[in-house]
Amino acid sequence: MKPIKRSRFAAVLLAAVLTFSLAACGGQEPEADVPEEAGVAVQIQPVAEDAIATENKVSGKVSADNEYTILITSAAKCTAVYAKAGDQVQAGDILCTLDLGSALASYNAARISYSSALQSYNDQKAVLDKQVQLALDNVNNTKALFEIGAASQLEVDQAELNYQSASAGRNATLSQLEAGIQNAQSGVEQLDIALEDVDSNGNVIAPISGTLATFSAVENSFISNTMPLAVIDGPDQMKVSVSVSEALVPKLSPGDEASVYVSAIDREFTAVIRSVEQAANMQTQLYTVVLTVPADVGGLMNGMFADVTFHTDVSENAIVIPTEAILNDGSVQYVFIEENGTAKYVEITTGLTGNGVTEVLSGLAAGQSLVTVGQEYLTDGAAVRVVSLEG
Image 1 (cartoon, rainbow, N blue to C red):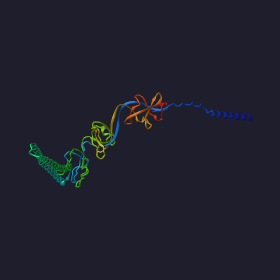
Image 2 (image 1 turned 120 degrees about the vertical axis):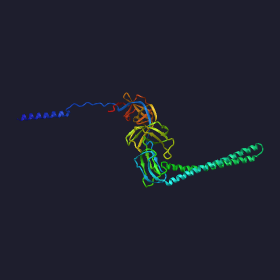
Image 3 (image 1 turned 45 degrees about the vertical axis):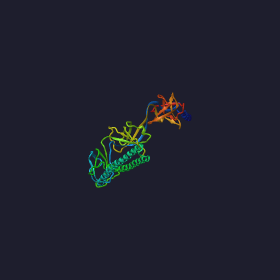
Image 4 (image 1 turned 90 degrees about the horizontal axis):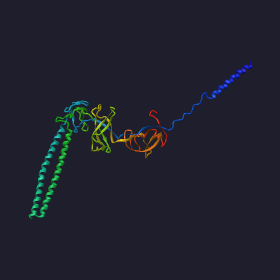
């Protein structure tokens, strides 16, 4: 029985050794090495010609195309109110009634003062003109007498002095009278403005039809003479007003188009420049540009903000590439193009810049393969591997 036991033990031992040997061999064949593709992975696009324009973005405001502001610059008490903000009014409607007794009295006095100053000027001018003419006639007559020996040179000189004195006196007197007229006229004009939209009974009259956007009149309270009493938005289309710098204003002309985006209604549209002011605002030193909103643009309200983009310095048939493809080392701008699996370093000069694109003035030609992704990792002559957008 013992030999049989040794035989079984030997078989078990042999099986264990074989199992260990197979485990040491890994039980499978080793995988073969897979070589990586050579070259830097890049994306390219063909260089093409296109139109480009410089984009100048400014902020502005939407307002009614024929907005009208009523400002009463004379202190007055409101005795009756017939409308409220938001109402639709018609031209000629009475908005409120003001107690303008003292203002109307001042207005009448100012007109009388102006008429009196004007009459005084005309009367004085007629008298002074006649005196100067007499002095001039005397000069001419004295010279004629001098020619025939009937008057001396001293008499001629004295006549000329009298004429010069009369002319100087006339001019000085008329200048003083003109100053009086201007003062009186200024007073009338100020009161004209103050009472432009008020009738003889103190009724404030709507000058146009539209929406009463703001209205500050309160019965039995005094109105402010520094803020608008009312603002009426006319029924016509809206406009956009912006302020631009002196560098931009020479590049803008009535009839030019601009892109407008109003975030409040999430709407972008094209507007046309209606007017460009030729004088800068005294405080801001900026120039006002007004754009007409197309008739089919709805939803705009007075006071909404608008982002306006003016396209200037347009270049047609230009070499235009993505701005992000351009690299620079501080003094030189350059790009890489792909030729037969190799990166080529190309120095360029640039011109106009637009919305994410730049004009290339020299260095590139249409049809070349521009590296647009991966260019930061390239050197001249480096091997490249073009991958798709999905890659």
